[in-house]
Image (cartoon, rainbow, N blue to C red; front, side, top):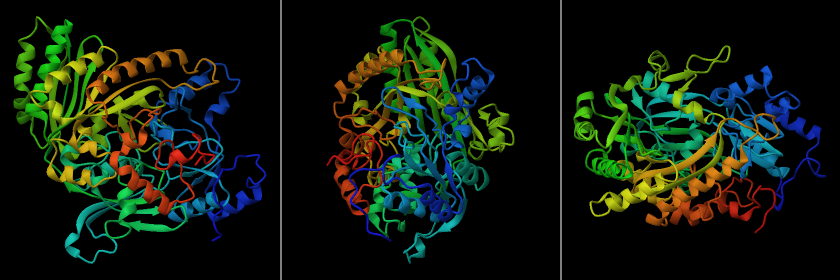
Length: 578
């Protein structure tokens, strides 16, 4: 292996040292033909009338997350106004093995190329795409192995054996849930969206609907295989290269190496999973304040525990919406918990109106991610491409997110201290003021306070901002438009509206930050323009992460926006600035 050239800038097509076609052909042979020239499907719309059948059909396909995931030149989110637009790489190594990934890493390092990694492609920050780059595309690395007992490499103590599942880097959560829950009768902690990549979620930390019970997705990580910047394949766990193992647990994807395989602990499956959904409107601002006050008090007394997760939304027009889930409770137990609040709502018809009745439903846990069961009950949409697998389903609610263009997205950890009786009124006032400016959503599963001791312990052993362990929720305020793309007539982004929306989100979040000035936020769901991103995403853990980056990637081969070490590069990642 040749000695690495100090990396000061990365090459672009047209630069004198850009690889020739003959050099690219050598890479193609090294990866057994798995090198593809990438083209953006949007390029095919040049000169196509906006109302043509071809154009309309293409934009219809953009609402199918499986179509987006299977296109090397697309990402699940098409951009963020004023921040980034989905751009294709020049070439992609459509990796089918770890050897393919190694060849791509070595090639990018030796030829000073901008390197991009894409699995699920769900990055709101645009980190799974970049123009003038080489893409490592792991979509075809999708093997799943369920273990009755797994012992980590380098561990001689068989007493540490535990049920687990091993997945390759291209696996999405719907596939692993079906294998582990539906078929094997165990539980694995992962993401809520079925088409999110396992590897990307784990590296971000990773929340699922039941995080308070089972911890972060990265908290269940037992072992990983990762290709580092020197082209070495490393197996990392608590015994083998523990610092790197710690770093990939919430340190953010794409900064420390290319994960090719992960092994996650599986858990006992509860008897039931369930959901609570409904919408209430208040007839005045004072009534809305009282509704929020009652819900905060109810949450603190009844839902602030490991059984409950997901969302409480405060929307314009004095509307409060529940989209909650639960585990480990049966139908009657859940109904009994909610009865006091529901009785109060029914008794308050002078001030409140029930927009959608609050419905509580418990079902056998093993059916929650069973594609056939979900289709039969109308809970999912189907990948409608000819020949698509029947298992290719996605939550109906996620269709709005497929192909979206973001206008703004901010988040903040909300400390559990604000649930104390003497602090609840301050929280109520802040939430009310924020909701007057834009919709805000409390994701109660994305704060670990109130969770099990094991969930909190594994969270504190992860690289992400320690504030997550003391927060009862992650508050998210965001907006977006449906699929759009610059230069496509009739389908261009609405820039003026985007700026108006971004200002509204900024005003709403100012109300939250007045209450929680140094809240911190979640790296995967955060503001692209976050000025203090190192503190916000990782807090006191950032310096340790930076030291790990220096050890395993001293030349800075791996770069993503606001990733570890990104401050040393220009915003596009092509020129070193420090």
